[in-house]
Length: 331
Image (cartoon, rainbow, N blue to C red; front, side):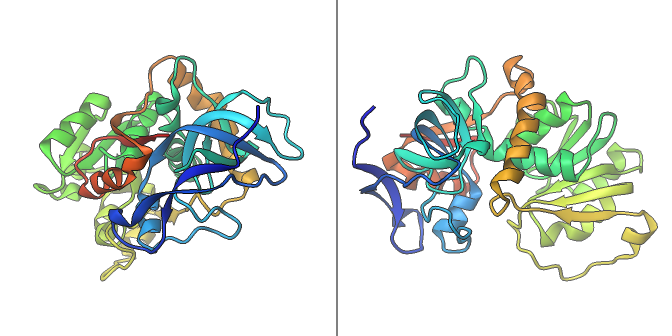
């Protein structure tokens, strides 16, 4: 197919609020070795996009300076060394540039659409599934018969983590900020949901587990939850940090619990990882998580969908925290 010379994309001329995003016209990405060009049909909105828009999360060296970390669409061109067929429908974890009509992505970071999926549902998968799999299972070592506490249970990350943890045989506890969100988490499979505006979640976890605590805590809040998270963990428990929505600093931190319970405190970021590292996660997802998507035992939860030009409204909704699940853009 003949590709156009230019494309529409969302530009952030200066860091700021949602209104700082505008639809612009510019050249298509230039493909490098190992990359594919995707004609984007849908893209996901994620917290890192909001942070980047504010100027608080610069893209890594070599990545697109534009917003967007997950897309779904059709492969329309391939770079040197790529064997992906033209015309294949893929979803992909992008290094940036997903809020656009075309996006260049390393081929290793692409996955096929699960059977029966459309572009919006496929685009809702990569960021959350890569993040949850790498942190909850690979780093956190959650296994069948163990228990996990997932903070932000109604977020895109949370709704994904609940379903994957249950699908692989874990007991699941979550925190959320309202009765409606707690109910949604339980409906997705959580064994119990704690409204953190009404209860001390560390006390609740002790009660729910008869004093034993949980094996893994998946935390996206950060500093304000640090000490409570340690109180939630069982012997040999693992605290896995994936974001700092409440800030990265800790005022008080008693390490005694870490020593006496042999705890592990760890965490990771996804975006700076190499294409090979992300590709390894993609292959795990393809063999272990994609069958769960195709048999319906796991599915993305989509709260709202906006046209590309309404990206500011999508970001405003994200920042309101009124959503349950994913916020998507159609391109």
